[in-house]
Image (cartoon, rainbow, N blue to C red; front, side):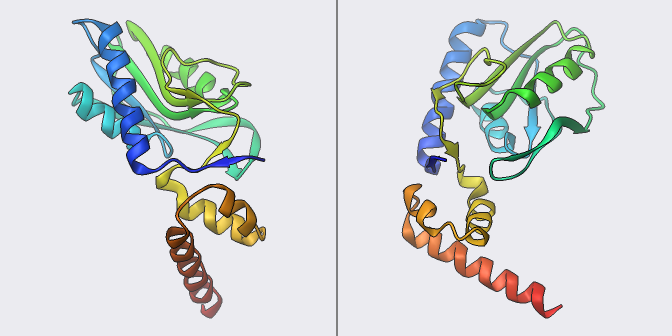
Length: 193
């Protein structure tokens, strides 16, 4: 498996590119609300809220992956939204369309709420994704370690003795070292209880 770890600066730059695409194509009508996908899409949802000046933000959650590269048989929606989407122009935001399975389930769920239209946007897509978002910035076949999930990735790879893999991500060594130290501290604390 190939890994990449984009920096915060890269993610912000890609987010601005995504917002520019959305503004260019959405015209004056824009979007009435953003639906963000927890957990991976939360940071991008916040950035899109700022960049597109949309205050109406709601969150849904789908669980599919249980570890790096390991997933359930089928994604399940674990957080439903209470707000009405009827007649609204909705922007669905997530960080990546990997298999696309989660986005397919979320799209079905959101369409049942009768929006005027639903537009999907992600930063990344994988070549094998079942669904291609309406807007995306980059295609990759690598496992993406986003800045907001570095600890989770480092901890998982440490358990799997993946220090060689961590070096391939091009994450700064200083960050990897701090995450490993924190993971060791966290493991010692767990072991003590």
